[in-house]
Length: 387
Image (cartoon, rainbow, N blue to C red; front, top):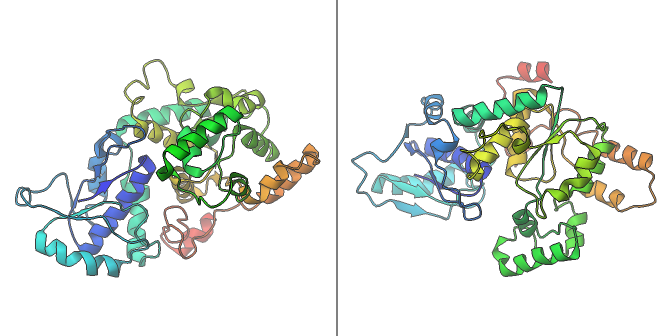
């Protein structure tokens, strides 16, 4: 049994690892239990987000998946494990969990987030790929609406999808400032002092150092300058994914002023279409995921689970173009007011030439779900012909 936590994309990662761990232990997997998210108070369960029957069918030959504990185990008090170390190998998993599982019959795992090693034997890497890109299909109602919104975006031509990380909790967790005004910056600083446990970035560097190190999300003005420099015309159609930015939608004005064809799911949905999803952050994130995965070009304003997952999905699906902002190298040029617009644009374009090309190959230590080439592919001939 596993309890998964965090937002929808964090939950996905933990489900992938849970399946692989079940395979390593040769154990049955109970459908993962979703912990209520403390930030969004989302009580969604597995089948609210994902197609459970499809999940079971696709993985039927790999891992036995059961909806609940069998009657023979209901009265068993599970051994709860919260201390799976970072980069846990299959050998570590077997040596620490097999005896407990055999002795007690049920093993309950928590805190799996990115704990399993990224360097696994080929058969387990392929299982991670299978879970990520085939078994975890969204619930039919989510898939239907996500595809409808995609078609509405595409009905008038190609479109760019932006994942904007500008919500209040993102500024608090990254140790960054939105730069809207002194008042808004103080609100973020005060929240961070009140909840220091939320800070996920290094706390021993200043905001300015963090910004120049590329550790902060891009704000609306920076995103606008970046996509203009990369050649987006004023008439470009743009879908933006993410929650309401801190400071309200007014903070998006640099983008909406420069790119009037700027939409999110609320803009595209017909009256009532979002009603059953609107109070569930995970379901709303899933709709964004579908539109972004199907866009002609995708760009996240900051790293994170969703951006990484979509990057991997797009590479696996056929090397669809994904732009990863080179924040560390480009931000000094954003601060250089002596550069003309044409000089700035040329520098930014040069910095992103690699991102505009083929997807990166997986190197040791990288997650195969973000970098699926070549390990998720069937054979070397397929790889070379498709690239």
